[in-house]
Amino acid sequence: MGCPLLAPEGSLIATSGRPGCRGGGRGGGGRGELLIEAGLALASELGLDGLLRRIVELAVRVVESFAKQVSVALESARARRELSRLVVLEERERIARELHDGII
Image (tube, rainbow, N blue to C red):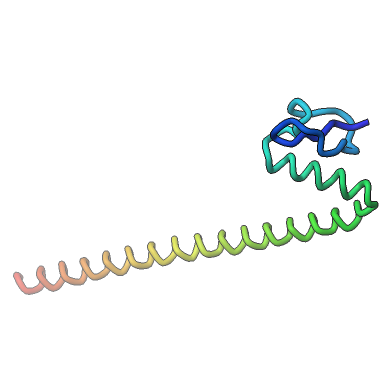
């Protein structure tokens, strides 16, 4: 027998198919995890474990893809900032050379 899944007001939603309880029977970490646990329990009762697992796998892929895109965007922004900094330094060096050459 699994953990009782309780709504915030304390009423029983379902009993998870997972053995052992985390977080006092509320699924562990708040409302989000409560909904996940309730969804898993319902999917198990309906025999949709495989479908739910596939949905989770697809969601993980989407999140991984998004994380990779964010990583590329951050690296691109860093490279643009560095390029801008180098352009400013080169311009300063050019102006300094011109001033120096004009004085001599």
